[in-house]
Image 1 (cartoon, rainbow, N blue to C red):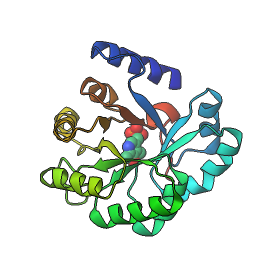
Image 2 (cartoon, protein in one colour; image 1 turned 90 degrees about the vertical axis):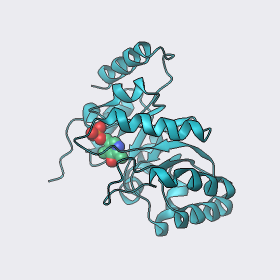
Image 3 (cartoon, protein in one colour; image 1 turned 90 degrees about the horizontal axis):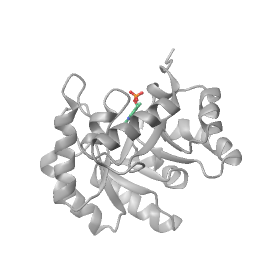
Image 4 (tube, rainbow, N blue to C red; image 1 turned 45 degrees about the vertical axis):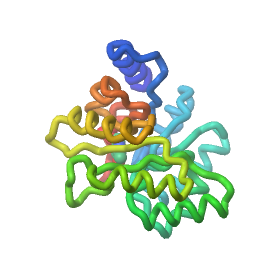
Length: 216
Ligand SMILES: *Cc1c(COP(=O)(O)O)cnc(C)c1O
């Protein structure tokens, strides 16, 4: 499964005229049984995504004893009361989306003397239930984060289901470009090739690597 995804990534990079290896694959391990995660680690993969701080804190320190070079990114919403734990645990956070969180991150990064790389989540579909800054507010929010000296490296999107994701990927890329940001966290199991075609630097693929998640 992992090898299959890796070859599809390479093919998509080639089709887009991009260098091989220019897309980072986050293997999204949320909810997956530890055996499946251990298997992907054993195959040599080292970059993972988790969407809950608590869940990640419960499993990654143990895996990292065996694989100290394993890296975990937070791709789910972050509450301000978990910022301290998140800054300590994750190598990147993809879901910075409001000023209160930005302020808290700035303070915590200062006090821990270390910082995850940060992405700002943009709600390109303007869905009320979804996290992320609205496209119209993105430029101002990016400027606010920069004013706090936050290491913002890119933007992240989760397109609305049942809409063509390419339109959302293209909008994200446009907002990033006009703000001088190079990182684009976009594309999941069902649409990562389209995301690579539109410049994704980080794709987040779960079920296509690990199999379906069992929430039961
Ligand atoms: C779960 C999740 C993914 C992975 O989804 P798949 O469809 O299993 O690839 C990607 N991004 C985010 C933010 C997620 O929560």
